[in-house]
Image (cartoon, rainbow, N blue to C red; front, top):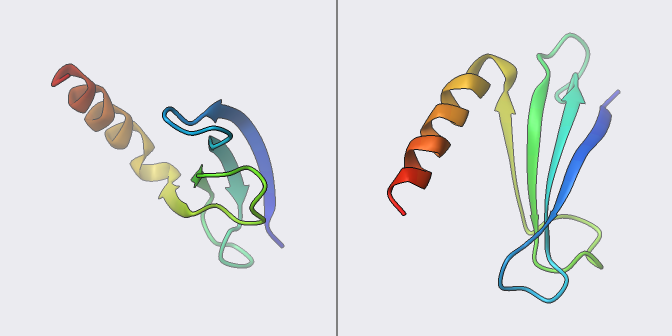
Length: 75
């Protein structure tokens, strides 16, 4: 069973009521599957599901954070 925990909801820039959600999900793909960090992009928080969603395996999280920090330096 998917057990998700919302970590943070961030207002999505350039939208009226959009959001970025960051959550952790234990066993996202069934029993004994590895946990992930789930990033959701909601163009409107009134939607039932996010417009985009990505699951990042915990084993890749540090590298993804480093890449995001590097991308931020470009701007």
